[in-house]
Image (cartoon, rainbow, N blue to C red):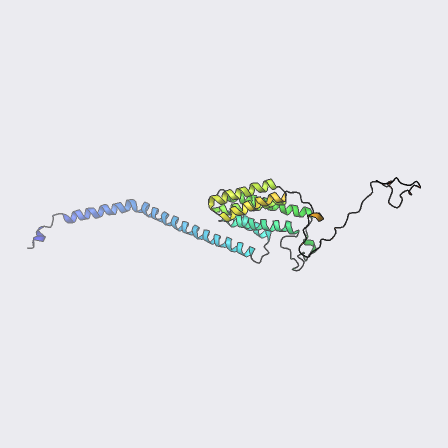
Length: 272
């Protein structure tokens, strides 16, 4: 007989049967909780994947609608404001929409026409006379531009990744302050632009902020018209005589040149 057969342990079949029974008991006891945990983990994983997919779809939709709203060079402020509200918190979509609207309102103030108005390509005037703005309407658009610029700053200044958006908001706020002749306020905004641009190392915006600050000093100076003596003639050019302003008499009782008394018959004294 083979020696391997002599090594067969007595009762091995009973021991294997006992191990199988213990394994079956283990499965009966723990299979339901384990399956439940695996099922929950699978559901959580599927839910996270679904949420991520929805987030990507919303992001694509947000930038797609933003691009559609700004295409054509004549965006609607109402559409941009609606986008900013609908996609609040979706990357930089709200800030970009608000910055674009701010530019539209500033342009309306400077040009004196409604945002989106069609202009005559030769005269630059609005084709529809109703699109012209009066002074109160212009000031209203200027105030709205300032409000939107402040909203952009508030949305982005706490996020280091949105520093560029913060600087653009500060620049718009400085422009609004300039239009209101608040030169000290404008200088404060541009100083913040310089400080932030130096932190994130964007020298072009730092230089822009300094350029605006330097320009503010000239805006606040009194402008006087030059006199004839201040004009410098170019070679071969003659400076024409400037027209004299009419002399207004101090009162109606003042005698005019035609109503002067006749000269006395007495001879005038000899002049030395």
